[in-house]
Figure (tube, rainbow over the protein chains, first blue to last red):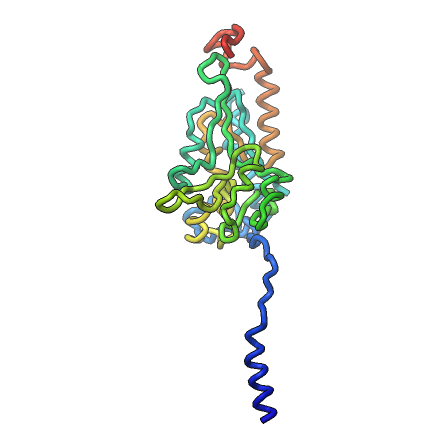
Length: 74
Length: 200
């Protein structure tokens, strides 16, 4: 009888439990240099996971694509 | 480490809205939402100046400071992004933003304000890079594809520069040194003469 009372108490009181509701904030993002894994859309010239390679690739792309003073004949 | 920034060269912008179109097309941005837009000062007056404006990915972003549910985060590259699963669409960020970057799509029959949408510097969001879920919520992740934002890469006059802050500043500095300033700037004198502005 005592055991049954204990079991029932545990089951009933379990409903009174509360899950933590702490603010988790925004999910973090994976590093962009890991790539998308979609080869068809990935620009050639760098390797996924290589942070410095990715940064240098974007620098070169910006310089070539946007700095027309470099591209135009002097 | 790269720190991504936009700069718009007001001497070159011709208000073609190509950046706006490129952005809407690349990310399939819905009607009523403009992540990027072109603002013109003294429109129609000789010497008018246009500038392309979107989220400037502030170093100390006011939207992040006021968000009551803390849905914003900043990537290692300094890109300010947000999590639409957490955003409640309250609009505080739009009041705080000095550039009017946060946009709210109208949803439902009564035009209820939806969750905030803004420029992502073409860096997607917290979903898996390149996934359909990321595209549906945030658009393409061009940075993870080794590309720069579509608006800047599509800019016909290269007025809009995007990329590592050091690189874009170097490009702009080179231009300023070459073209001079004020009436020395190429283009305006040829097109409009060097008269003072009337009715500005």
